Length: 567
Image 1 (cartoon, rainbow, N blue to C red):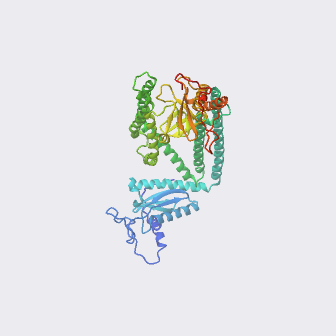
Image 2 (cartoon, helix red, strand yellow):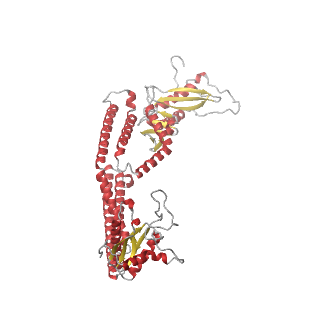
Image 3 (tube, rainbow, N blue to C red):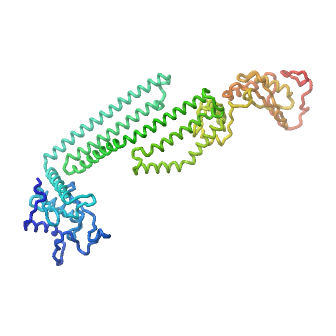
C-alpha cells in the first residue's frame, strides 16, 4: 500500500540513509581519500564527459539504465549522480530490490520528497532515488508523474515477486494453462473440421457443375477455378484463425505466471493497440474510401459505355469505316487501359496508407520491377498492337506461322493462340509472330478463293498432255476442292531429266487445307496407277538404247483429249 507519496520527511536519520543509498556504491570503490561530496546531487565530476552545444553544457552524456525487479521494469534512470553512471545506478538499485524481495519484504512502497529528488523505500529499506535529470523531458514528463508511475510499477513488481514464491498461485497458473491448452486444441479441431466440411460442399458443387456441363468425372478438379479459389480461401481463413487463437493463448499463458506476466502484458497491449489503430484508421479513411469507390464506379460506367459502342460497331449496328471495324478490339483495349490508368492516378492520394513509408517502398519496388522488365513487356505490347492494327489476321482465320499451322483462337496483347489440325493449342509470343513470315489462308484477294497446289516430276518420255489430264482428273476426284473455277496445271521447270508439273485447285474451306492436300496426293497416285503412268524423277546414268521422246501418235494418250485448235 502506497502512503504519502510526496510527504516531506526531514528527519536526520532518514536523510543520512538516503545519502548512503546514493553514495554507498561509490564509497565501496574508493581506495584513496576524496573531497567531501558537493551539496548539488546532480553535479558531475570534472572528468565526466559533457554534452556538446550551449543547451548541453554541464549535462552528463550517458546511456540510460533500467531498474528491474524480476522481469518487470520499474523505472528508467538517465542521469549520472555523484559520478555513478545511470546504468550502474540501475544495476545497484535492481540488486537492492532483489535483496529486499529475498528477505520477504513486500511493502509498503513509500516515496519521500528530498532536495535531490524522490527517494523510494520498501518498508524501512531504501531502494533507489529518482532525480529531476532522470525524467524524460522530451515527452513533457514531470518528476511527480515519473515518481507516481515508478511507485505503481514497483508495487506491481513486488506483488509479482511474492506471487512467484507462492505455491498455490503457481499451481493455479499451471491449472489455467492446462485448461487454456485444452480449449485451444478443441477450437483448432473445430476449425479444421469446419474447413473440411465446407471443402466437401465445394467439391460436391464442383462435381454438379461438371455433370451439368457434360464433363467426365475423371477430369481434374484443378480445372474448376471456383473450386480452387474456394478451397484455398478456406485454408487461408482457417490458418489465420488458428494463428490468432495461438497468439491469444500465448498471451494468456504468459500472464498466468509472475515472471512472464510482463511479456503477456506486452502481447496484449500490442494486440489491443493494433486493433485500436486499425479501427481508428478504418473510420478515418471512410471518406477517402468513398471517393475511391466513386472513381471506381464512374470508371466502370465509362468502360461499359465504351464496350457497348465498340460491340455495336463490330455487329454493324453503328456504321463505321472498315478499318475501325477490324481494329475495334485493340482500340477498345487501349481506351480501357487509359481509363484505368487515369482512375488509378486520381484514386492514388485517397488510398489508405498511400503516404506511409511502406506504401512508398512498395511503389519503389514495383517501379524497379517495371523498369527491369519493361523491355520485354513493351516489346510484347508493341508487337501485339502492331498485329492488331496491321490486320494481319483475326480470330477464326486459318494461318501458318513458321512451322505452326492452324486456326487462330485468340489474339492478345502478349501472345497469339493457335489450334492446329491435330487439336493442339499453341501459344506464340507476339514478338515471334511479328518477326516471322505469316501465311493467312483465310484472307486472299482472289474472289474465287484460296488455291491449293502440289507438284510432281515426270520424265520426258511421258506425254505432257497426258500428265496434265491425269492431274486434273485427280483434282476433280478429290473432295473439298471446287469444281469451278476448274483446276489447272503449270509446268514449273524443264529440268535436265524430268519436267516439274504443279497442280492448282481452289479449296472450299482453308482450314481443311492439310487434310484435302493429303487426299489430293493420294488421288494423284491412284489416278496415275489406273492409267499405267509411272511417277518418277529419272536421272542420267548413260545414253539410253533409244531416244526418250514421245511419238506424235501418242501425244493424246488417255485421258488427254484433242481440242478444237489441235492442242
